[in-house]
Image (cartoon, rainbow, N blue to C red; front, side, top):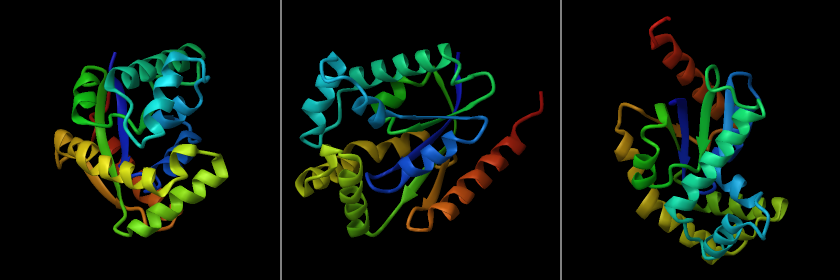
Length: 200
């Protein structure tokens, strides 16, 4: 089975998590945030240990572990009735993190759009991450050195995912705008996508 999917994409602190959470509350959308799924793992869970080992250094979790976690969560969410693949649009946030993961998910995702949340103000993104670290007790966002490392890794490893999906699927969104205006842009684009789909 392939899942109708939109991807939320952007550097750490670009606001994709905020938009994903809002979209997840709207009927017809199911939001999955890879980082949240890792952070919710028990510390004695093998995947939880892997996450702590890598995130504490600002590094990406290995591809195999990331895809394994995603599959487990999607299966569980389908089984418990919170995700209805036949009618819900899957909103992915934080996955795929690199072209290799995109290739591993190719047979499972029918990607309709990639929303690239862009912010040219690096200081603003760092401030967002530090505020979030304090508010949500996210140790991986607390230290400036780790934040800088995560932003470097995003540029080196994650940005090439945009090229993988190609310019036709990528929608650039100014994440420096208010959350309401960012959301409006995303919803308008999704509505236009639906209009272009052939009626069944």
